[in-house]
Amino acid sequence: MSDNIEKVKCLIIGSGPAGYTAAIYAARANMNPVLYQGNQPGGQLTTTNDVENFPGYPEGITGPEMMLQLQAQAERFGTDIRNGWITKVDFSGDVHKVWVNDETEIHSDTIIISTGASAKYLGLESEQKYLKLGGGVSACAVCDGFFYRNQEVVIVGAGDSACEEAHYLSKLCKKVTMLVRRDEFRASKIMAERVKNTENIEILYNTETDEVLGDGQVVTGVRVFNNQTKEKQEIPATGFFVAIGHKPNTDIFKDYLDLDETGYIINAKPGTSKTNVEGVFVSGDAADHVYRQAITAAGTGCMAALDAERYLAAKDASFEVNTATNY
Image 1 (cartoon, rainbow, N blue to C red):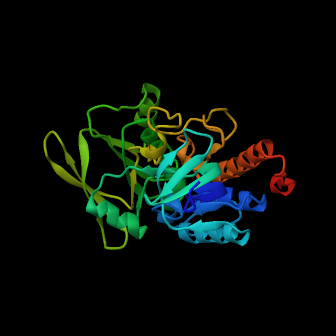
Image 2: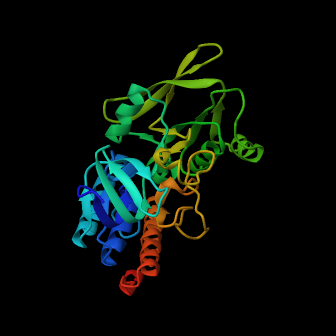
Image 3: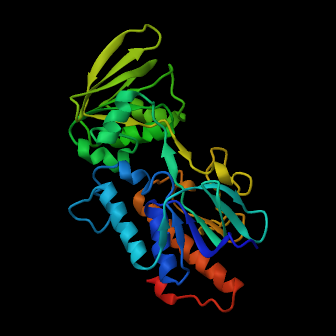
């Protein structure tokens, strides 16, 4: 082995609730974890202004502040947290090999993947502006719908997830306007009928977003156009929700791990964090296309660390499972 190759027991790829929780558990189990934060340290939650549904924060907390606290907790137990991202992997042999920024090579006994999934957005300049400001653009109705109680909002999308989120918002908001690009839904019939039969959901077919309107700080409306007639109109709204899907950040693993048709990592054994490669585990939104919540990501981060710890114990009799990690 070359002298410039680093050898570690546990490498965590990605931060956010899953990665940091895995780091906390792995560090307390004396696995000396090394965590690379990736190109978005803290993950998607760093784009969320207010988090009010994570247990333990009765007054709520901002997403960036929560991630800094989780990072500090992981560091407190000895996690080596580093900047940079994994650009290449090789899981073909007994040694799990990764490369950082196409330069540094690391060999790890165990790998925990916590790379998450990125929400898809329309790409409009105005959309991105208010997303970064935290002023009314969101890709998660369950996360942010509460802040628009008794207000009027717009949601973009035509699939099952969009219908589910529109229906969720309808229970909180005074009015939900749903923008469907075609003349029909892509969603299953039962989901489409649910939104069609909801009194405070208005559906605009053949309609696309022209611009997200605002006062420089928060969203005040959405300008849309009919892609058949080219007619434009402005819809008053304080919230703009985008529900056109997520892309799991798993491309670098596709040659070695089993992925589903949309790129999510498949758990080799249901109820665990195991992948089809021994010693490689997955946590968070890289494998979860159903819940996608901070609390569920944190839970699977815990699972991945415990699974990795038991894998090491089974492989090396000198490595003892730390039962304290089970509390």
